[in-house]
Length: 69
Image: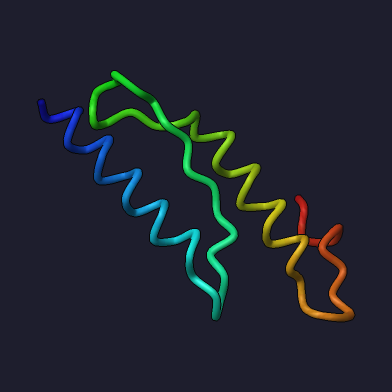
């Protein structure tokens, strides 16, 4: 039942976040239905998504390509 309740909680949180306006959430929730509560996407996938978000939202005049080592 632990996984059942956690799945419901995540869905409710996602619904709340999708209704935000100022600022809008614009995030991603990945589900691991029937997975244990420690489940999550691969760490490298999370890092890639974060890097893309930062580059897309860089301040005007910034050169995100120079940030990659």
